[in-house]
Image (cartoon, rainbow, N blue to C red; front, side, top):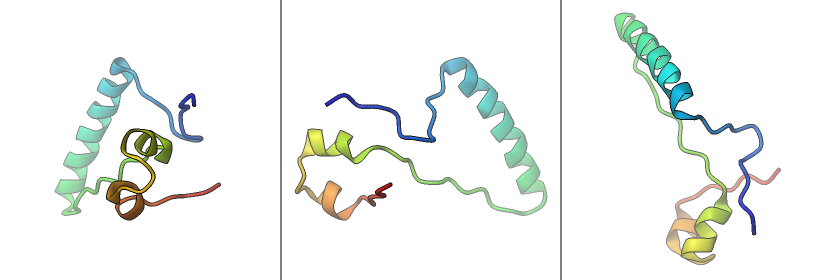
Amino acid sequence: MMLQPLRGVKDWFPDQKRHYDHVIQLLESTVRLHHFVPMQPPIIESTAVFQKSLGDETDVVTKEMYRFID
């Protein structure tokens, strides 16, 4: 099975990541200035990545993951 990026999710290359980090730093400093607390959304990954390496019936796949079926 060939793994493909999740629909609507884009991989970033190092140069793009540096720009992203800079924007995040600006946003975090602004957020702190106004007494908000930043949040970090969960990582999204295809279930197939974990099923292939861990198996279908492991605790990670069956109990610690959410599945979204399009």
